[in-house]
Amino acid sequence: AGTTGYGYDDLGRDKLEEIYAEIFGTEDALVRIGFVNGTHAISCALYGALKPGDTLVYAVGAPYDTIQGVIGITDKGFGSLKDYGINYRQVELVDDKPDLEGMARLVREDPTVKVVMIQRSKGYATRPSFSVDQIGALIRFCKEIKPDVKVMVDNCYGEFVERIEPSDMGADMVVGSLIKNPGGGLAPIG
Image 1 (cartoon, rainbow, N blue to C red):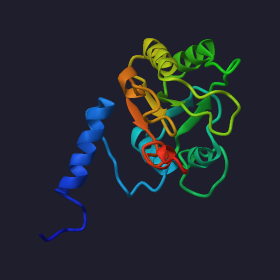
Image 2 (image 1 turned 30 degrees about the vertical axis):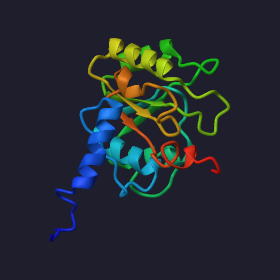
Image 3 (image 1 turned 120 degrees about the vertical axis):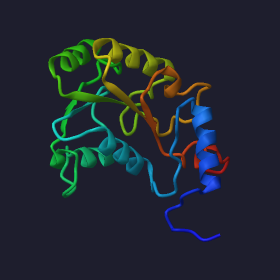
Image 4 (image 1 turned 135 degrees about the vertical axis):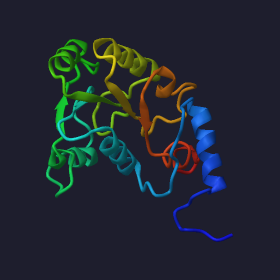
């Protein structure tokens, strides 16, 4: 059959995304080879969820280096969220746990906070990765403070390591790299 090149009515892709949505208990899913890595997928989600004047809050300290460039914490050239007028704040961990008091103060005081990001993986930090239960508690806490805030979870390295996912705990968006656990991370030889 002919194609426009845009992938409309791609039954295989549509079915794959339907399966992922069912597995993750979400209303929809995007599983595309066009996302070249987790940073690319997370960047697309952030650019889609935030607009100029909005504030993104990282609830678990600084993100890893590739996301820092996307946000504009480090200068990686033109096109960061900062370049588009999106503000950034972060709440440091206290004893490797989210600072709930600090989160509450920041989210309550700043009406521009639209997205709270939770990075599940420790990345390059020495803290342990967060469990789905810990993430769920933080999601509930954020929603109690500001019911309309969107909570996004960077789930890279976290997919399929527990029986439930952050989407089961009320995350508005769960984004990650599917080449790690459902792909290369499960291969016995790496």
